[in-house]
Image: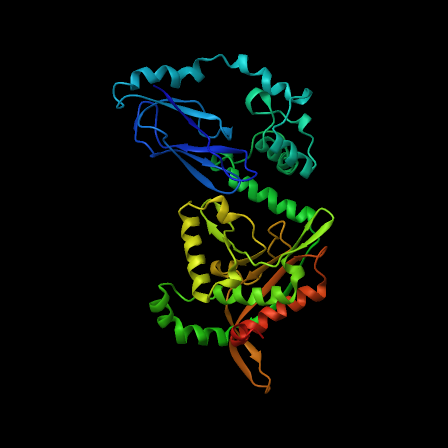
Length: 403
């Protein structure tokens, strides 16, 4: 009896994925629910478990292939591995034995009207690409989202190739294909720049009071709650306070409507080896400081382990990014569409500051940056939002007293 391995449902609006790698080879024994292949979507990496125990007898889609939800990836047959391996070899060799010219006409037909998958057609319409002019790599020559993204990026990629002939030092270069996640990050950031009227305003915050609170309570906090007391929980709470005062920063544009959100799902940007991801702390306004720190720690671990789910990544209303952990002194963060605001935290550095009494003191200072969509948020609202965050950080009791 043969059991097919298929692409599972990957989440709302996700219709296809790229095969990142196979954990097993044809002829290998597999156990039921054992991870057998890893898929990479636009947002997360998903491990597909073996639906049955037996032997991997066939791999239909190799690493790097784009597959749709429900597509067959391979097959598992009965056996323990050793006996079934020889029989599985013809299936594995079949793609190589098939004459290439037989399959070649399908992609070539795309420019003359091959259809696009629905998700690819929608993406093409959103970014202004004509799917009819794209050579499809999907089944039957159909255009996939990956084809659309590649076509959209082609003009930018073509610019450096203006000089004809071989590259000067090609032997000293490594050329690797962009992962689906990296392509998605690139296109979404560029889409945010092309779509939003993006502007950044800056301020600086004195971290003296926050350092004092943290140093006083960090040991007791960790013993009581089992998690460290960091700066991020204070900034999350400060941002929520400011979002309540300036609701436009927590809004988004939907067609011709402005959607003002009365809930606070705060995205926290996390750097991983695969790229930048933004898991979301749900209903952060209802969490204690310990709850926020525990949520961030848990999401950070899942991000580093590649275990984030679609639910972890979607639906944020506002984002906080901390380039300071890498030493950044100042930056202009790019919006996480469709959100209208993102706060950039930066490196804390001792700087001479003139105090109210005229004395000069060395203070631990951090630059803050708020990038915002000027279509929704006026300059007065953006500046006032950032001042509100500054006030809450410089006087943390304001957060506790809701002042």
